Length: 77
Image 1: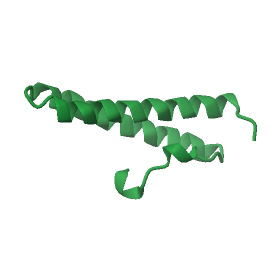
Image 2 (image 1 turned 90 degrees about the vertical axis):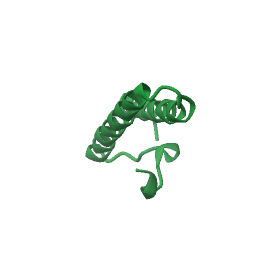
Image 3 (image 1 turned 90 degrees about the horizontal axis):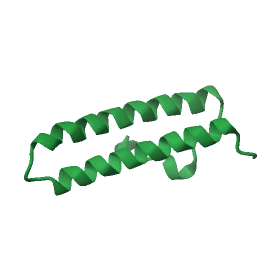
Image 4 (image 1 turned 120 degrees about the vertical axis):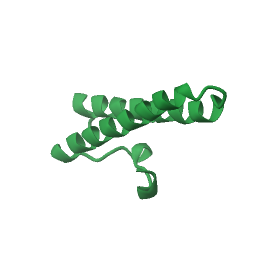
């Protein structure tokens, strides 16, 4: 199937979400000396999942399949 602009943009959004989650996870592990950052990492996590849900809604509305590398185990959602 040919990739459309929508596919490319939605995939880019999911890439961004993955990066946001990784940054927040790494920060929580590495920044143990400064608890002030935990709030920031929590905000990043929360917003990443909000964005992911919106992207999934757009995939569903267009009857598109989410790329395999962005499919998460139900326990991780």
